[in-house]
Amino acid sequence: MILDSFRLDGRVALVTGATRGLGEAMAEALAEAGADVALVGSSSPPDTTAEAVRGLGRRALTLVCDLASAGPEELEALVRRTTDEFGRLDILVNNAGIIRRTPALELGEADWDDVVQVNQKSAFFLAQAAGRVMAEAGGGRIINTASLLSHQGGINVASYTASKHAVAGLTRALANEWAPLGINVNAIVPGYFATDNTAALRADPERSRSILERIPAGRWGEADDLKGAALFLASPASAYVTGTLLAVDGGWLAR
Image (tube, rainbow, N blue to C red):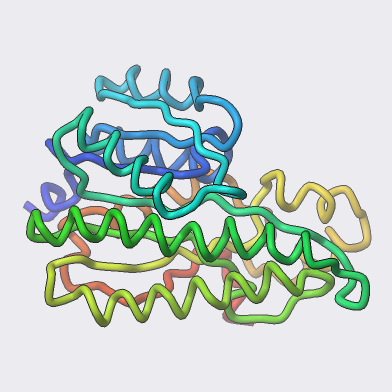
């Protein structure tokens, strides 16, 4: 049965940025399909998400790691704690991300470095640590969170755009290298979602209206809209899908 290929029973996932929003929704989707989930928060344990995972009958491990300062050793420790707790790691969701909205002529080095560190550098070294475990086990799934600004330039978000273009390139590069190891690497491209990152846009009536007018679906995305895409890319149903950027954007990129 095709529906069986979407099951994740016996698998273990590690999700960053799992405290709220898109990361919380994706973690819940994986748990609904049968996975146990290690949940990473940046400043405090993602206890609410863990409660939801356990409510679905799955095991949850809460971890705290400030990705804005974490080096490769700390990121490797997240993978090690996950495998120590659950005995394996099958799925990594590199979801955590930050944004700085500043005109390029005024963007400072600290803001540039913070965004690149969280969105790009930590994503690579966490994928590297997870990839080593997956390679030894014979395969796995890595899902990065890209952006519409992996394809476009945006306005007043130079560091974010640069980092998300890097996520797109990294997704393809790792997919090429790791396909022979049984590791599929893909990215989800969320459109304009109602999250903390878009709060300023949604609070600006003129900007919000112009965005909604361009989205064929005519609405902001909700976190639950990402569940199906995350589950597909994490599951055996996507066995022959790697190096892909899957847009979940209400049709934005089609305009």
